[in-house]
Length: 128
Image (tube, rainbow, N blue to C red):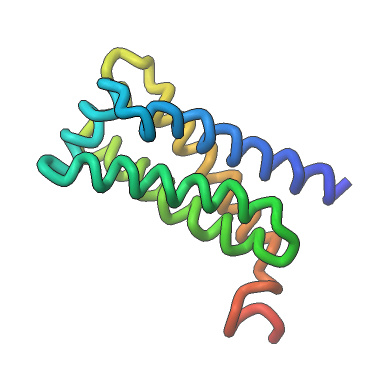
């Protein structure tokens, strides 16, 4: 049962992160607009950098004994996304009904649970 729940959490987090990569990597206008509001002149660097981190996190979620690392990357990235929505973008961005914010929040929660459930693998903390 626990294995199934962890797999579902991994799939939720990975699918949400991976579905945005097409827009980030192809330079879709809505992605450019979003990252321009956040990073100004550094839009491309932040857009592509965020995409790379999300891709790495999504892969690591499914690597045995590295789930903690993927979850940690996802937690950090999604915390940044949530805070960007709260402080800069607004909950609803570009008339999306809050879909991007909700996706970031769901991924943050799923990744946070995965990180907690894999705490025994954390360096310096885990095997105490």
